[in-house]
Image (cartoon, rainbow, N blue to C red; front, side, top):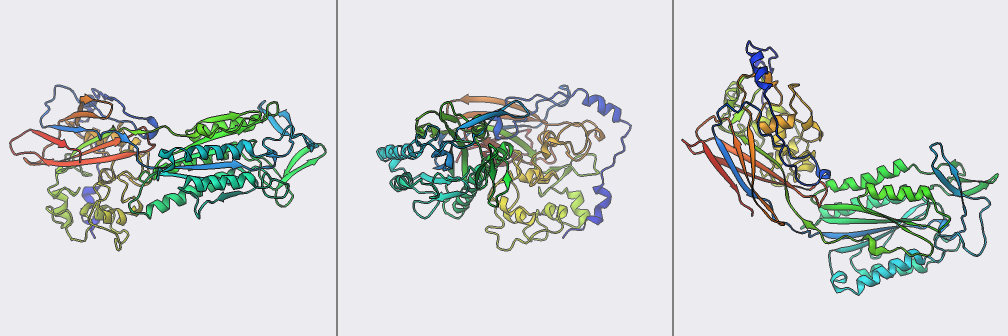
Length: 583
């Protein structure tokens, strides 16, 4: 354990401005920040923030670093494709619910069953009394898959079924939520198609609890992800959710006509209200958010199908199902009078995983900003604590881990106590390449992020964010705040090699880095770059330079891939070329 008290006088940054502060502010008035091209899909995360010039061009630019690399070539996404069909089995599928319409406080048309309920035998208003619009259509879809050898014999395709009304139930075709065998799943659908829909049978009976269905779907996917984590080698999955319904979400146990008005009752006979569309959309969003498990989930997409009887439509259901598809990044479809659900609409085209440049960070591992100091200091062992401070602390300035316990001096200094590394697999390794060992991540309370180089999802590697004394676990927007209130975000300061925890106005002749991006070649498969970095601070003739290249893909939400490399300057040279070669 490292004693912070021994160096308390050097860990408190001064807030006094020297006599040259005005000059420093004048220099900073010439600041110009050039954002060069933003790559990829905005849904993936923060945009590429590469800053060109932060200081007058008259200043010299010694020590140029040239980083050469090509993005990983695009390839067809190789992952499991798992369909989860969620089908409404409520009473309105078989019963003549004639709807009446009123206006809510906002002037929106609201549909509710007309009382008394039409119990005639013509089924004029029943949505799908024979179940053919839903189940025969799905059976036909599975028959087409059986007839296609490419799909029928594809071991990466899986199928699952949830039925819902008052409750939601997983229908299994083989002991699990998903089944690989299309014939087995087709047989399950045939069985459900032929199930009796007489009152009280539990088929096409009860109310319409969307939240129960969505909650169960989320649980099914979470369990499937956990199963993937326990399977070696792990294989990621794309989940396609197909949600079919004919009406607005009504929970509870049933419907009652009271004084000519339809009211909904819970299991205790008490009146309840329809479910909140906002709450339902939030539940869809929480399902999509499972894409954060990037190692195991390629994407989650929700499609919706609204079954209606022409002239007896439910506008609330139509709008909600459309909104659910928007939140779920899928498509919304309607099927009118007698029209069967076309399950072919809910398929994904072949996807190419194109890797695009997401972010670049270049830093001198032998140069450190330290609170209370007015210039960068030498850090011989690249552990994040400068030699000067290590000597004051009684540490070895030439060893990253002075006491040899597997935890770096900086980690112990910033966190004198932490969690035990007992039982950590490969404790001295760095499985995600973020600069923190598996043991150090566990010690810092991030054991679940050992294989995720960017735990908080802001496209800054955990090790770099930690070395900058920022929260790399819980603060996804911490890169956009301004810790030292000097007008630059934490991300900008990390990018430019400036001190993110000290006001830049305290320093004279502050020379941030300047990035210059050159596209050497570009094809449909990949882009090759040279990134020139000017003005890096040299501490020795053989300084160690570290490069982080982050790739991402618009095809997969929240996908990011880290590539790193280190190289030393040669004595007597002010140029360093670093080539990141693809494996």
